Amino acid sequence: MANKLHVKKGDTVQVISGKDKGAKGAVIEAFPSEGRIRVEGVNILTKHKKPSQAMQQGGIVKTEGKIDASTVLLYCDACGKGVRTGVQINEDGSKVRVCKKCGKVLD
Ligand SMILES: [Zn+2]
Image 1 (spheres, rainbow, N blue to C red):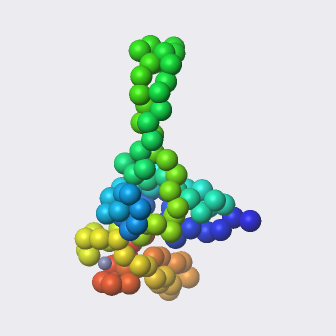
Image 2 (image 1 turned 180 degrees about the vertical axis):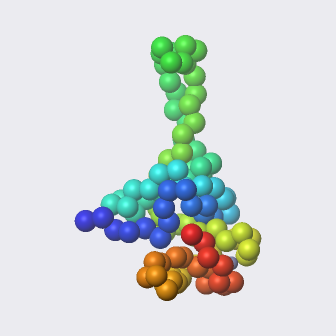
């Protein structure tokens, strides 16, 4: 069963623990069933590629590895950091995420 993550593809997040602590980037991909995400510029893995049609020289390819979604917070540009979020329900019943610190709508 797929768990819903607190962040989704396209969100800007800040890493709060681990070797990339403090790094900020966009969520490239989310894996709700694993509770993991890939974030731009975070947990960079290097892979050595053999020469191929697409890449005639071969060489080193950098790719973002998955990280645990619990190690990131949604970034609030008003606060300038990763923040805890709450949910605000609009009059039309739609839900948006808001910064718990400053109340800014983050969706
Ligand atoms: Zn805020």
